[in-house]
Length: 84
Image (cartoon, rainbow, N blue to C red; front, side, top):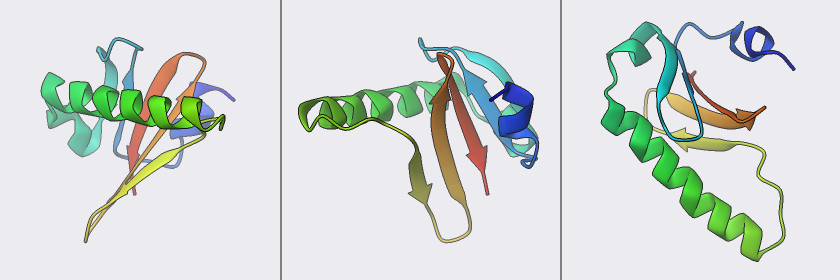
């Protein structure tokens, strides 16, 4: 799956490397700081601990708020964050 395929249906997206550095951002996520990216990375580290200890593969993480949902996935060593 290519990066363009992953992001094609989303106007608000951010791509991070595995160190939490912002590679690209569009829409409302353009205005998010490095602290936002580091928070996402920290959450993924916590999830990694859970999935490793329970021998499950990580596929996707959703963070649901009243008016939007952040969806985070990892493909080809890149972290993709989109807003629905």
